[in-house]
Image (cartoon, rainbow, N blue to C red; front, side, top):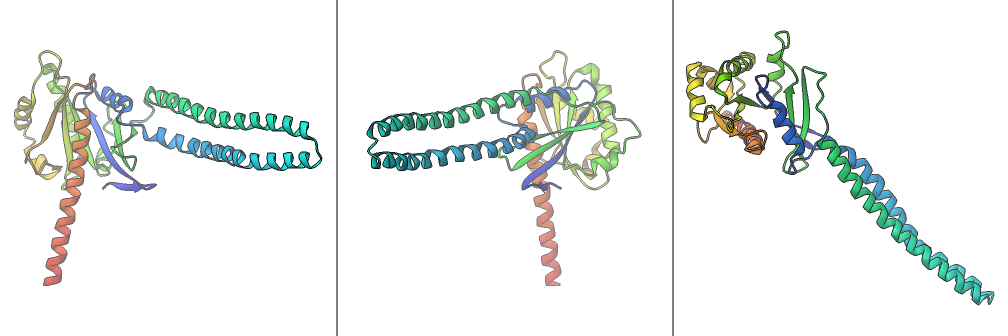
Amino acid sequence: MPYRENSVIVFNILLCGAQGCGKKTFIQWCIENGNLLDANFLKSIKLENEILTDRINQYIRNIKEYPRHVKQNIDELIGKRQFKEAEIYFEIAKYRIYDLINAYDKEINNSIVKSLNDLKSSNAKKMDKTDIISFIDIVGSTPSMIYRIYYPTDVIPASFELNNFLSLMDGLIFIWDAQRDRIEENYLAFQQIFNGLPPNIQIPLIIALNKVDLPDTIRVEDLRRLLAEFQFEEKLQTSLFIDSIFHELTIFETEGTRGINIHQVLKNCVRMIVLKYHIKIQELQLSLSQEAQA
């Protein structure tokens, strides 16, 4: 179930599929897309912004306090009838105030440039391949929502406890390579995930039918026929949460290299996760109401 982490709602989503299906391209698009920012980047600049704010506040205090000190010193010089010295001191103090204001502007400009450079660096980062399954945090439409996307960095070994891992997931995105000559590889990867599904927990699933821009590829209706031939219907009913609006498995045709429909895949996966728990809450409320009336 989605949970809160430092006042942020986290959705755990597994991105899976056969080797070479386009998972890396999918992840890279999420990192580089202008509408989605790496949450780790946002966290890293939070401290920098706090430091910048302290510096700016110090400049503002200096700018506010400096004229008072200048006036005191000028009054003291005038009281000693040192008029020429007072005039020179005033000219020097005036440039000092300009320096403070320029330093204030420079600090802000430097921060903006650094943040942009950090963002470019963050977007260009290489994905870690040291673990069987790694993850990235992607910020949703608001910074208070994070898609924590897990993805295998290699073939998942038989020794990996997939059943336990899947029980922690809120949603699944399976990337199905649309090329006809890769049907068997897709089937085996899909079967591995299905065999690892915990019974009766109904995990929302979205299928991204990827690489549809390539020649000799299948389409959505072709994939539905294949899934029927592979006899996945029972699992679809017992272990997966099917879209209650369309009453069927949700499939999007995607082009990972151009980012076509990737955002839609993410949004609809989260929508189904929210819908699933909304239905569960309604069922619980109904059950409690019936219990109260009994």
